[in-house]
Image 1 (spheres, helix red, strand yellow):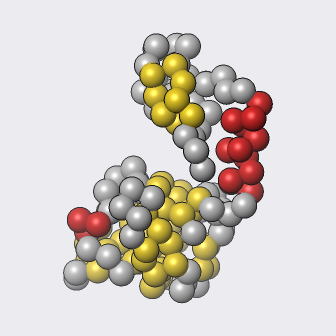
Image 2 (cartoon, rainbow, N blue to C red):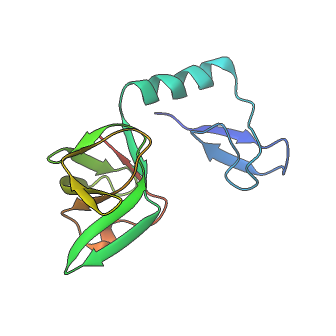
Length: 127
């Protein structure tokens, strides 16, 4: 997905964004209709999985947590858009309950086969 470089009407920051809100001040961005359609098409295509909000290392195994933007299950392969590395989802946990699949909108932890240094807060994970 191509990123749009725009200027925020609220704070004046020039930002590169895929979203509809300014990354700095949170104000709603006004994108042209084509840009909005491209964003919505990518989301519907099932590409985004989550934005990493926290990273934990438990007994040498890495767990990333965040809010799911799409359905996911154990065994799925996901990719970090920053480093272009791929990881396999070895486990899922929802509110301290181990599960095999999770749905869009859930807050969950993904056990992945990565080092803690391979993922940082704010990374986008996609299918």
